[in-house]
Each structure stands twice: as structure tokens, then as C-alpha cells.
Amino acid sequence: MIIYSSNMQNFLEIYNKIELKYKVLAIDLYQQRVESNDNIINLTSNMNTLLKIVQRFNIYDIPSAFIIEKQNNFLYKQDSSIEILKI
Image (cartoon, rainbow, N blue to C red):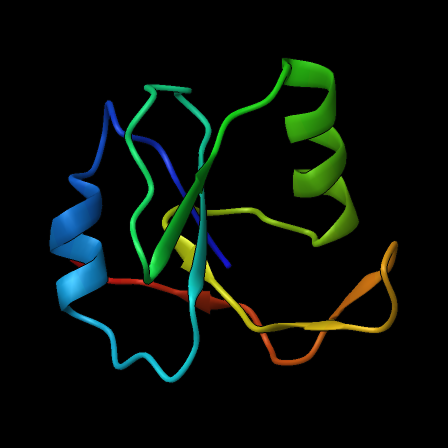
């Protein structure tokens, strides 16, 4: 999962600087709608949901990245420490 803001960072610049083993769930806090592709799922939501995600995963700086693991059809858990991405 990568949490970023498109008014501050270019997502493709972020995406190209990290090594990826998994598909990416990209959450844009600025909520600029971008199409998804085979490797990137772009997510937008209402502000309340975005705030819950930021609080749940203790995001204090962006862009941030971490791995989440699917526990069941309804539950995903954080599976790595949060990495602040330097651009």
C-alpha cells in the first residue's frame, strides 16, 4: 500500500523508485482519479474513510508505503513497518 498526495508528488515517480514484489494499492489523499492497471489499484474514497486509514496505520508523513496481508475476505493487516519514501 502506498499513501501519497498527487498535489505534492507524482505517483509514477514514487512507483518507479521502489522495488515491488506485489500489486500496489495506491491511495491518493488529494483524490485525483487515475485509472488502475495490472500492477496498480488506485483508490479514492470520502474523507472520513481516508482519515480512518491514516489513523489505523499511523501515517504521519507522505508518501508512505507498507505491505498489507489479506487475512480473510473482510480483513487486511499490516505486514511490514511503514517506510517514508524519499523522492
